[in-house]
Length: 198
Length: 90
Image (cartoon, rainbow over all chains, first blue to last red):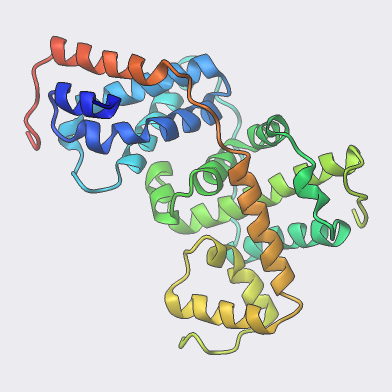
């Protein structure tokens, strides 16, 4: 019997093992991005699943359990951080979505021109990408993680972050632009790509 | 929009991220796709941005600590032991 089948057989609350537990890896990855620490991410993951289990009766079966779990994880993380009085300054502003989309595209177009052989993509180890993502302002980082790293839809991200879809788009594009710039600057500094116009 | 309507390079670029993210309506996506197929200037941008997204996803995979699943499962069983089961929708 697999671990999941064991869970189905043993957990009392019906459906939880089938719908929620398969997202444990994704919740852990999300928690790790939020906290930046393996031990804290493990605690947050456990806390998230315990909260979800306690409130399983409020979940509508067949909807997106992943979004629901991510919402619980993020809220728990924010509450914990507030309690520790470590809230970072936030400074997102919701700019015009089309302008942001075009602007983020332009940064990557610049990189492409500087690096037609695509050395850029071979330049990094995971830790460098992690560091660049971690340095993004919270709002942009959350949108980038949920979209680019976890492949959630704009609607799901809007639900998790409790913001309008237009704001999701704006934060996502702006976050991508900042991330691309940071990675480009790093690759240029390290001599991986030649760097040019900036 | 019919999906075959011609759009400018600027319009294509403005919709490119939403297109890559699979967030455009079918007709809008058709317009962007048609533009990319025909435009030598825009296709490389699409190709590079798509590669950027794939690059981020590839670097996003993190191993889950081997004992975490068991730890969570044990916590849930303990919850069952300590609290009575709630009926769905209760």
